[in-house]
Amino acid sequence: MKKQKIIIGITGASGAIYGKMLLERLQNLTDQTEACGVIFSENAHAVWKYELDEDPMQVYRSARYERLKFFKPDNFFAPMASGSAGYDTMIICPCTMGTLGRIASGVSSDLLTRAADVMLKERKKLILAPRETPFSLIHLNNMKLLTEAGAIICPASPSFYSKPATIEMLAMTVVDRILNLAGFQLDSYSWGSSS
Image 1: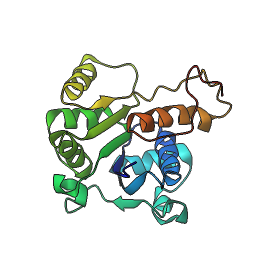
Image 2: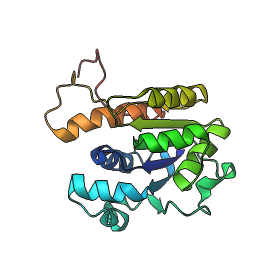
Image 3: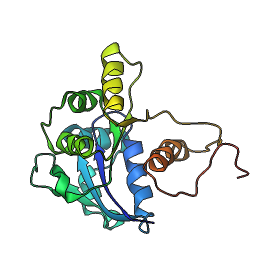
Image 4: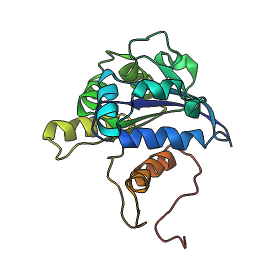
């Protein structure tokens, strides 16, 4: 199995736990990842601190995430700003509707939206996990436009049929679904399985 070069975008949508669980899950997929670049939007820092009671700067310095490389959103010299860097997949989780709308409109105002634009133009996998409810017609039209452009919209809607016992297990139902869509082989619950 070819190892993936992956980009993770974390925006200021509510649902920082999804981003945290995604980073933690990727740490255990070393046999399937060649490189993992992470971009926090400016607002993601504030939401992470508010919802998780953690300083997101500690994430950057934590030995727990030593395999991840963090990039500032204003760094247009980062490798993922160009298709020549050869990333395979980008996941934005959670994804604000503002970020989704900018990507749908082709507005590359920071590294996160530029990297998403690169994934679309290079016909690579772009997975967006919006955490919003309800959706307006503008949201739905933007999601339709991105789907037509080749992106995968995977709303951060947890599943309950695995009977998750904790909030982390519930969030992991979304994270595992996203990683399955990205092509990772996971040992996780699936409907109809005996586990």
